[in-house]
Image (cartoon, rainbow, N blue to C red; front, top):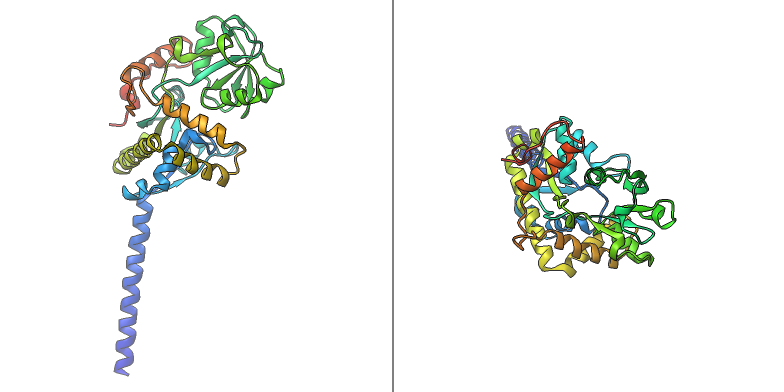
Length: 323
């Protein structure tokens, strides 16, 4: 009987210890879990984050990262607002607009050093001559800088929303379209349409070179999880640096994510996108990948958006940057 009691006591003791360790482990996992949602579907635009995941850079930093892409009904910003994701990617002008509307977001890593936006004219003419004509714009957003340009250049474009691709433009339903030099521009090239020379207006070459993609999170989350934010930023930067040094292997990783997320694309397009994204990460002045938000570009973007009534308040570098 004594042996039985001793056995039961020891068994219960071990069970309690095991449960205690399990509870502690679950708690630790919960603290270290980091959910990242890029602003768009799987593609080479986000290659550095895929690399950081596949090469174990996040794991080495002590983070358990899950990359969840947005959907039409559940966009990245909605996930951030609902605390379903901890960080997302935003263009600088987007982030400033969000901040102006009362949602405090902070930049923890800047990847883009140059603007990728272009306007392509279907009729082979200079987009600056197309006053009042129909120009395609993303229904999901990203068009703040284009609206500033249209206002400042007195073009008064009639903006026509499109969802994800260049079909409206190819079909002739619009006179010109906004495009990213790493995405829709190459889609147009693949259609065989003439998209070079004077029919392409590059924002970065005409006084509108404002940085785009960076990693953002709410200030509330950042204040409570500074260590995790720093780890994620540093591991992500390491992923982008590895991608720049190993483009072909990076492309293999990108295609893995593309296939897993059932994205209709091809390797040629993703290779062109990766090359262009990496080019845009190099600062024009320093010739280096600086991975920093530039105060002068924040000032330029704020001034433009204020002048065009897209902001009610000036947004400063100090408001945006994680300290």
